[in-house]
Length: 602
Image (tube, rainbow, N blue to C red; front, top):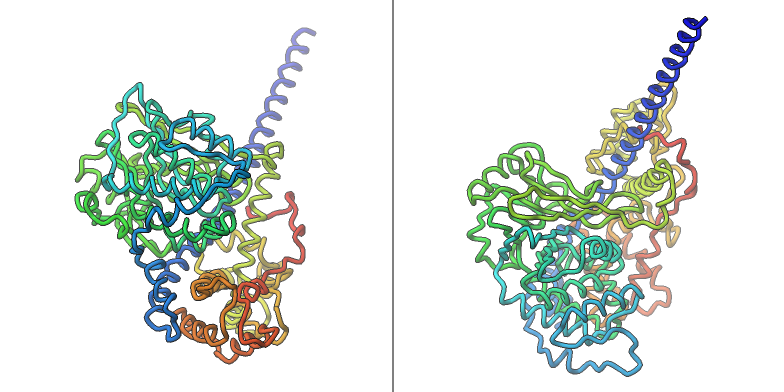
């Protein structure tokens, strides 16, 4: 009797253990699939981000082309040449800016007292938490003072650490003020005993770039030897035009925004290139190349630096063009070892790339990427992180994620939110090339069946879009696939279309204007010297002709002229170009079609 009872208990225990193992294995697989979905979503975001940056490099090239060829340039537009391209505008007199701007008694925001102290840092932080706007008078005064101090600094700042004075390194913040607040909350404010390095890309994309810049500049002025600012690729006038900082300034400072932008461009040119910690760790924003010469970089003009602001590490040996971004290079482990050994360094810390966990270690531990903007692409898309360094010890990483909407949601729902956003922008990229994709599909469809093999469809997608994405894996969320595994290729464009401002517009023209609307907006704003929002038909035609030539846009000029004439509603010979470009937008007919439980990325 006793033996029977014992064996029954044993069998029950074995059954319970097997059930627990099955559940555990299922849950591990479930989490792995969710992580894979999240990874593919981040890959979409990053591929499109890099493609846009490649377009930004093309836009910069176009401005050089435009100013050399534009036959209708006014005197004021010729002066823009310096503003857009050379960053060599005259040194603006402080009197013309700060001293002529009064702060009215009715102003309720923070009032800074120069010379600045730690009290001003606290004042600024509290004001920005209450979403107050710093008066233009103080913004300009801070920028002038910061530029004056930066001009006295070397290209590389040298920092020493000790057990009692650890150094904190932060990566990209991109206007995400809550992340900066989180860092200061967890790690403490900058001080003589708590030094920081902010490794570039303080601005753009987020809504609070000027607030972040003011906090960093004021902290730098209070602690110039203990808070270090490195330049990133977004500390650049042209990047700000595309990625939001210029609009933010002009929106928040309608009267004095242009003055702020002018002095900002001067300040950018004086930001240090990098930091060298304990004579063994190199901190720069982007990366290195096989020709990186630190001796030369110590004495080169700072505003001429490009490669080290744009480069990215890769697992493959060698150094080759950064085709993803269109600037800088990809550098392999061999290049890292060569450069570090040449200058007796042990490690490269860089930023510039969003990482799911906020940081990443590669090249046998010799390269560390640090990224401090959490939720960079979408709520829940990634963590932010910072590094603490102390001589003689390994780097320590601290992660966080500032979140409100998704903190109480299950992992499945959080991944779905990120995934849906990624697929949405990918479909918008697809519809902007509908004519080109359709032509490519039809060339492969020799039987005119409306179907292609999965391999053929994936080949066409990559050939036209050039995003280097795993199209086979993504296919189930982008197209209809029949029971034989063939793709109904026109379903690539189902439930989405670009709204036409006028029905007479050709589809190819509409797609082109939608695809290049950001570039065109920047170009037209450059021509619009009186900031009226209007350009003449003559200016419009001349600019479009240059644009289509430089960008190799194969559209008959008569189509554009006809559309422009239609958009000249009051027939006064001028076009409200901002309204013109906003008329081209994507409509998603079924936003809620994909549910969290039916997505098929893996």
